[in-house]
Image (tube, rainbow, N blue to C red; front, side):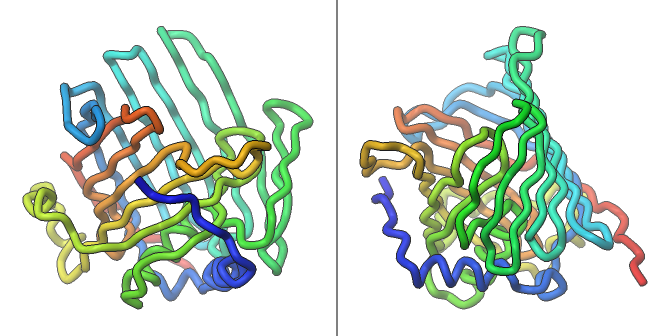
Length: 265
């Protein structure tokens, strides 16, 4: 279990500096992938429960991300669409959840950071809600960039603030720990036909603990933890999401396809 991170001023400044890393310095591959999802019970894999689909397109101005997590056994369908600017300062987001065949929630809006890495998120659903984003806040692609930069620097990890708009609340503090690829994941192979996407690419393994920052009570345990095995071009091969009570999901890649590169002048 990860301990609660202490976000010092230095860590916040580091996060803000990494947020400003030019996107051109990081080679992300536009792609779409599918994953098989199984249950997790205190780290032990269980029965198949659904599927996860992910698509990322890099455009001339940013990244367009589409995600869909279908948990058939729970009759749950979660869909997300996000557009993040290349400089990591603007995020448009829309998150939809369907349960039992009926829509249960929709959250959407826009988040903007200034040159110092601070800003605000405005929600159109729920209408009128706003959230303050402190300096050092990172959006999804920016934190992926930072993780790869730290992995290549071999420095073991970093602390940051993370926001992707799933709820109108403050960003979560995240403690990212980067380590060796576990032996149990050594057998994860690139799907047939997609070998070119992985040729010459480094595999990066990390774990992250996510802590709520808007709680009035000090919490020493993360709200949830996740882990990921990804290539250094942003393609994820494996991941987990584990709640505080020990339940969660594990997903492994089953299909992978390259998408056309944007032709930018």
